Image (tube, helix red, strand yellow):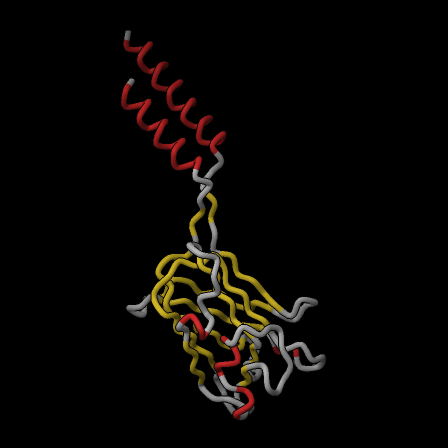
Length: 193
């Protein structure tokens, strides 16, 4: 009976924190255009599970490189400058038009747990239909942690958010589960007697 009480108390303690889990150990964010067009991104926001801060912000130690860029006014650094959404030129990253396989890689200051990743596209009409992305996340050893395709920022908010959180069940759910386990234990004990 003491073991059952300990398990029940442990479950309640975990549940009472109201915690949730994100995607752990993310170090690199790799983004490609999903429809064979030039890659254009006005901002990448990677929210930390621990602090809620944007870890893909250059002032917090993130860096960005790309396969190419349209001009000096479309540097990869525009994707991590904290300004979103944006117009071209001067406030977005834009790959060169002749780049057959454009990509953007953002490296965080250190591996971290992410709640979500938001990609902001281009806001000027006529070109924002290109804002469809394939996304890959890697740890600091180069192991793929996540991959997803066809995330479209061609909408009214000019953005798309990928949510990595998985909530821990509510205390009432865990209490019912524990009560069920206790009931099964008592039923098994009665049958033996």
